[in-house]
Amino acid sequence: MNEDILIRLQSGSVIVADGAMGTMLQEAGLPTGMSPEGWLLENPDPVRDVHRAYVEAGADLILTCTFGGTRTRLERGGLAERVARINQRAVEIAREAAGSNAYVAGDIGPMGEFLAPMGKITYEQAVEVFAEQAAALAEVGVDVLYVETMSDLNEVRAAVEGAQQAGLGIPVFATLSFDSHGRTNMGVRPEQAAETLLALGVNAFGANCGATLEMTEEAAAKMHETAPQVPLIVKPNAGKPHMVVREVVYDATPDDMAEYARRFVALGARIVGGCCGSTPAHIAAIAGAVKR
Amino acid sequence: MSEILKQLQHVVIIGEPDQAQDLAAQALGAGVMPLVAIEEALNPGMQVVGDRYECGEYFIPDLMMAAEAMKAAMAVFEPALMARQEQRQVLGTVVIGTVEGDIHEIGKSLVATMLGAAGFQVHDLGVDVPVNEFVKQVQETGANVVGLSALLTTTMLNQEAVVQALEEAGLRERVKVVIGGAPTSPEWAQTIGADAYAENANEAVSIVKRLVRGA
Image (cartoon, rainbow over all chains, first blue to last red; front, side, top):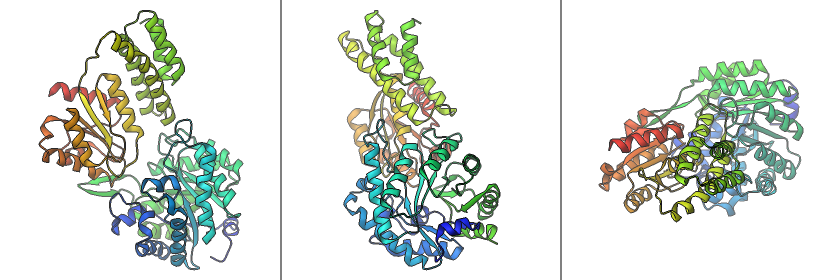
């Protein structure tokens, strides 16, 4: 995209983000137990196809296939030494699909480990882990460093700090997953998250993933109320998953997601999209609903 | 219940490992039987913790600190049990783990801790446990309960794989299989031939107790 994303945000228009990558890749043949990040090196085409499908559906912003791209996550698959290569390749693939039609956000998900004292990783080590990923994403060139699906307040702080440190001044967005009685599973309240992220100077914040659409909506509203000056992102799951015999079905239809997207925009959201279970059809419905 | 045991239960609930250790030692010093302390303080304490988690008062950090407090107290009581050559009545042997491909651990660990507190011998295999490993551990430990946790819609299928592998190994009749994890359900338990689904750790303990009694 030619217009700087921060200028675009200030202009008042709504930005449509993409939908799920993981569930789409599963449909495209991602082997069970294989991480998307590990798969994309040998299989860039299915990943690029998913990105393209979202751009064609109307997404203005797509997230790189790097959700599990920190060193600590990649270590589980024996891929820690390929951190830089995987993240860089993922950005290239996203750029190929986006062309000049969409912004590319470098996706930064949780490390998959508890921070000390519950776990073994110190705060400083966590910052380094996130900075490493952010540097790799920034090197190839992303429009945003996009921290998402966070549950722990210290972890999201470490991710934002890491991204700001290593990210060459690239805007940083951060969203949390509120899936436990209105808070994250670590007990973080939306108001706390908003205050912390405001103090860190993120360029946009909000809620993604979550449990029900209602819970994510409420959490997003509370974040916005706490710090209305920070642009709001809402990127929920397509409802809840159910096993129908042996097939996973998410219960929110494209029309449901479109309706919720309208509500999110009405409460003040500037960036809307979908998370787990959402497809290009959902994003197309959302785009149709919120773009003028 | 004595004042010391009330305090011990309280520090488990609020997750204070150092205080739990101290109070456990004090209890022994005051002549409280370790089995009594476990039954009257630790067990009910963890039950309260499970209840609070269920209703949204407690979150993961609270669970983990409570589990640490319980472990600290058990570290004091276990040698005392051995020294008195007392044995807790073992209600059953459990093999529990999060299935292959899945690294979610907290729910599974909470269930493991609470089953241990309730008097089961628990072998916690950890996360990302291959199907064959469950079978092997059932064989080696003589377990009569298998607990399978899965939190991803993709890895849920491995719960079914474990049930099938137990059948193939001729072990299915020997064990009760209980499943859990956010995307799972009673319907899923039925689909895959498990014995039961447990929605949370408290429920898991009562279901497992019921299943081994009925065996």
